Image (cartoon, rainbow, N blue to C red; front, top):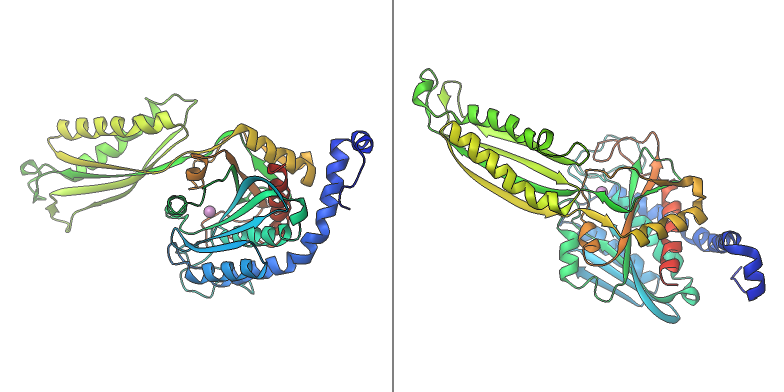
Amino acid sequence: MDGERSDGEKQEIGAKSMNSLEEKSLKPYIDNIIEDALAARHHLHRNPELSRQEEQTSRFVANTLTALSLDEVKTGVGGFGVIGILRGNQPGKVVALRADMDALPIHEDSHLEYRSTRNGVMHACGHDGHTATLLGTAATLSQLRDRIQGEVRFLFQPAEEIAEGAKAMCADGALEGVDRIFGLHGWPGLAVGRIGVRNGAIMASADNFEITIKGRGAHAAMPHKSIDPVIVAAHLVTALQTLVSRETSPTDSLVVSVTQINAGTANNIIPETAEMKGTVRCLTQSMREATPKNMERVVAGVCSALGAGYSFNYQFGTPVTVNAAEMSEMVAAVGSEVLGSENVVWLEAPSLGAEDFAIYLNQIPGAMFRLGVGENVTQLHTPTYNFGDDPVRVGIEMFTNLALRALE
Ligand code: NI
């Protein structure tokens, strides 16, 4: 079925059934490549590579794209990033689809036949599934050049887990000429065959801080001769939480987590210094800009009250992931047609996790959506997480239809 209908018939058939005809017509093309996409996922899952070390993954992706006879395959983009370019037979806009490729330093706890073969490294965030889905999408769309008006750009990004890959790929021109961009993330707790989407913020910003408290050391039996940085650190952990509980409106969101405290060398020595590190998550840029100043005010006040000095270092990391409303509406519309409207979940709240897809969305309109991997699947970043096979086809259906729609 390739949509040859008269205008009169189009009007009679109506949008809904026309699209289901189109969806049906994509099925044979996906059937042609789905086994390869699943085999790709298993291969990637077996051979996970950490951020900035995705050399073999990158080669595998480039070889797979080259075999599809795309118009261009670029390697070494922003590190081990790969870009595939597919031009349709008609001129038009450029839509980018993005998958991330890196794995995590976790030892897989699994009896899967295709479990990780590398000690202490696994695809615990499902980037094997994202990459296989995008390879499958490229394989599907490469059979559909006649229907493509413009260009589809496939971005295979390294180093997402350390929030460096998107920035590096953009610096190498990945978004040049791109009009809109879409990405997905496999989501445990959401059934296979469902997607979740949201207008505006869908993921939080992630920034880091380091505080060094400068006290005075002493024998632990003579605390009055010290300025004890451990006591200061204890007060500070508590005081910093008032930024969340007393200074942030209960209807807004802010996370300040002190995740590391290091001080001292022995039971009977009060140390000179204490170090604290942690992360801050926000859902708005204004909150993000205000928080470091507020934190430093609390740090300075507590240290001053207790007689200590300090250094305060704040590093801005990943911005808030903000979907353009028009683009999340498009994701939902395509989702309704491909999966049924009952399987499109409008998310009430964002996740306070972060995603460096935000970097692309800061530059061009687009949307990230959640792809259901199963209601009983274990959480992301755990040793038993597995993206699974079934979501791959759903992801390919979504990406393929989205690309065609975005170029219309
Ligand atoms: Ni991830």
